[in-house]
Image (spheres, helix red, strand yellow):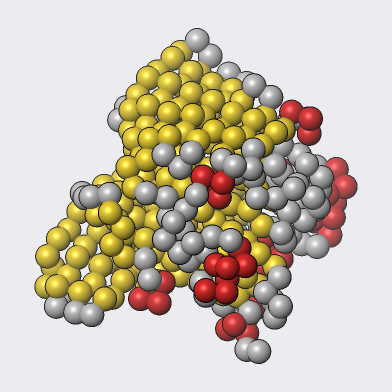
Length: 359
């Protein structure tokens, strides 16, 4: 078997049958707990929003630190809040294993008094870490979607799995957030997805770009995943385009990815693209989605979040994974026979997750 086939997006009829899901129908249970928290598995529920007061909010409920998936249950909540006045708050808190509970028939994640619950249409999220407290209602305006089955499979026997479900590709947000005694309310546009797997990401993934945004009538989810060296750095492109709430393009075979203005980040040592571009060709028509970096929202070395024996082991193996999150401009262009027919621009959030050594 060639390296190119050692990392694939699962999308055959046999894949759907094995997983018990349908190609064009997503059920609430798919956003419920999909792992049993055993060693080697991991799972997280993610939310982000652009608010109309100029702030940006990210909330993540996870059963473990991604850098140590072989550990037992280690619940964590991450909150990132970036305000229009330039203040930025990044909080991460671990909780006792007994504080964790989940449902399997829908999203219902509880970590102590914090919760992340929903049914593919409406979600309620509350979290409090130190002086930061957030309360969010997210109502979907684009239907739940997944790339094929949502599973990416690695290895000759395809037994190593990483899965991704964009439960709310785009939705309306009502948010209340507090910094100490300072309280704000705002509305905006948000997104929620759910990820899980049965093998540590650093064992199967070298790096990925992931982005989401909206411009004019278009909503976008985009990713470009590069597999670990042992899988020949195989790549998996993903792009979903929706227009006025209806999905119009999501065939990965029609996607081309490219980067421009690549530089080495001084803190993480990773190569970062100032521009990432996804081109979707469909006959004589094509869409071009371009993300242009303007500001770094987060630059983190994963080893800084590891302590004790795990940190010593990570250093011994030269682990230098990094996570970077950006904000900037999204531009969506539609061409008809190479003639520009539409062009829309707005702000967006995207990320670079880099587990491997810089190539």
